[in-house]
Structure formats: structure tokens, C-alpha cells
Image (cartoon, rainbow, N blue to C red; front, side, top):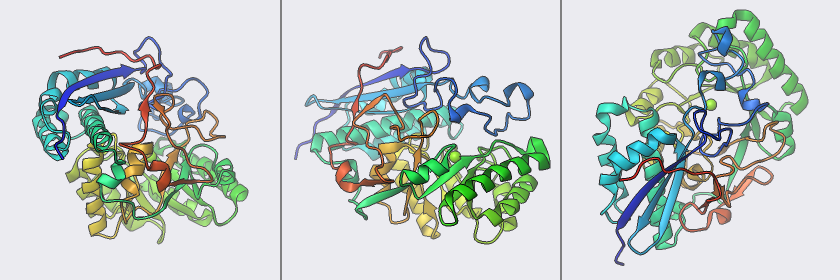
Amino acid sequence: MKLPTITHIRAYSMGGAAAKIHGQGGGDYHDQGKDHWIDNHIATPMSKYKEYEQSRQSFGLNVLGTLVVEVEASDGTTGFAISTAGTIGCFIVEHHLSRFVEGKRVDQIKLIHDQMLNSTLFYSGGGGVVINTISAVDLALWDLYGKVVKLPVYKLLGGAVRDEIHFYATGARPDLAQKMGFIGGKLPTHWSSAFGDEGIEKDIATLADMRERVGDKFWLMFDCWMSQDVNYATKLAHAAAPYKLKWMEECFPPNQIESYRELKKNMPKGMLMTTGEHTGTLEGFKELSDAGVDILQPDVGWCGGVTSLCEIAAIAKSRGQLVVPHGSSVYSHHAVITFTNTPFSEMLMTAPKADHVRPQFDPVLLDEPVPHDGIITAEELDKPGFGVELNRSCPLERPFEH
Ligand SMILES: [Mg+2]
């Protein structure tokens, strides 16, 4: 089969705090409107500053906005993907990464991926917005390849190892998630080490209330968004154990490897330690794995795309650890259904009150599948590429061209 070459790559941005229209969601799902649970006094490393305690948007969490990368092949087929990188990502795609993409065959994804990673080492700092951008290009390439050969990405990756994906829900209302058929609910912590024992008491009160509502068996987890120190995390974990907390997630910033190693030793036996959504290199995931993280949680839109996610899953597998990606909807679904060490997956609840299932990247993707009774089947993913189309009625801008 003679495969076409890639003729064009284009990058668009949407929303973000600096844009004319923000509060758009999409690839930057933190860019939501007012009164959304995702911006309601969630503990962060900025919580220690009174003026930034209430809202993550107040310190710029939604500053980037959505990046849409579109690639076009010589036979006219197009593929696309999204991430969180906005206008900065557009600059990187159009003025830098385009040279590695245009002119290559649609199946040369690993070669392009390696050239993107190595050519940006001098300014990527091992992660951040550069890796988000590279991820979007990688995902767009997989989408294009799948659309050209008319196969879903999961079949290009070796095929499904299970018939369906079971989801837990991340949001403010695990009790409602239980009614929607999810297997568990992950709560954001609202208090950080800046608040000491009083913070622990308040988050434990929320956990106790939720445990009362959902009964004994339903999974409950804490997402701590890098807001703690080892002592605080240790005390919180022990206080949470009587309420059967399943895991403590991302207690520390990604590079505090020693803190993770120490927490793992201190935690109640059986409770899991998880992290990874803000780690952007393969080496970073190896360090987290070495430190004893039980579940690696790369975000496929922030870790280097599907190409990197498969490598990270192999690191976890080599130690009997799980890889359960951070949200990311279809871009995760097509990978995790091929992984033997991903027994369940995450659904991020983007409905403002977390009271119904809304597609995570709404409104940018058309036909984005969502869990029904907590499940998405392999059959639902059985469409070329990632099986979604770009919603061109979104206010997309192309700030740079090459
Ligand atoms: Mg998290």
C-alpha cells in the first residue's frame, strides 16, 4: 500500500484568559465560566497566598487556552488533535515543528516524534507547553494515519485487550457519579499544607460525608494538585484511612521525587500513591516509577502524545505498576484499551456542578464518546483515527502561518 505524504500542518488557538472570548473549555478544560466546581477553592501550591486561594483562574490556570493542530495528507485526508497550549503552541507548531512534519509519509510518526523531542530540548525544559504542543502534533499524526488507512488508532497500536473501559469520575460529587454508574469518585482537596491541621480536619470532614453517602464499597480518592509537603500528606493519608481512601494523588510537584519516595514509606499499607499528570519526560516517569508510585498518570496531551504514552506504560508494566492516564478522553481511550496494565480509566467531569456527564473537551470535538453507566465499549471507538471531528463552528484563530 502506497501511503500519502503530509503536505500541510496548521495550528489554531481558542479561548484562554488572554483571548477575546474565554471560558470556552475545549482542550484547556480549566478555561471554564464562573461557578464551576473546578475553580472552587481547590488546594494548590498558590493557596498560601490569600489573594490566590479561592480561584485557580486568578493565578492564571486558564491562561493558555486550546491548541488545535491540523495535518493534511497529499490525498486530501486531514487529521487533527487538541491540547492545552493556545497561541504559544501555535507559534511552536508553525515556526518550528512544521519542518519535521511536512514532506514525511503519514506513517513516519515515531521518526517525527523523536525529531520534535530532540530539536526542542534547548527550550522545552523537559516538559510544559512545549511538550503539550508536541503531544498535539503527535496525536494529530496518529489521527491522520488512522483516517488514511481507515482504522481506529487502537487497532494501529495492536488492538484492544478488553471489550470495554470502566471509568471513575473526577469531580466535586462522587455521590452523583455513583448514581451515574462510575466505579469511583476522586475529590479535589480544598485545603493545603498552608492550613495545617485545620486543613486536614476540613478535607476529612468532606471525605467522611462522602463515604456516608456512597457506602463502603465505592472508591473514593483525593487529588491534591501539588499542594502538600511530606508531613501534611502523611497525616492526611492516616486520617483518611478509616474512610477507606483508595489513593492520594499528586501530593507534590512533579520533580520532588524524594518526597514521593518518603510518602510511600509513610503511608498506611494498602493505600495507593499516584501521580504524573504534570510530568513531561520519559526520564521523569522512570524516576516516579523508581520512587514507588503505584499508578503513573500521564496526560496524553501533556506527556508527548500516544507515542510517549506507550513508552510510559511499558515503564510501569516493568514493575507491575499501573498506568491510568489523566483524563484526555478519546486520546486516552484508544491507548488504554490496548494496555494490559490499565484496568480502569478516568473521566473528568466538566459539567459545572459535576451533576451530569459532559464530553471532556466540549465544544471542540464532534462525536466525542462519553461513558454510559460508567462504560465505553471498544465498539464505540471503532471509527477511523480517534473517531472525532473538529467542531469548526468554534471561534478558532490561526495567529501564525508558515
Ligand atoms: Mg490530578
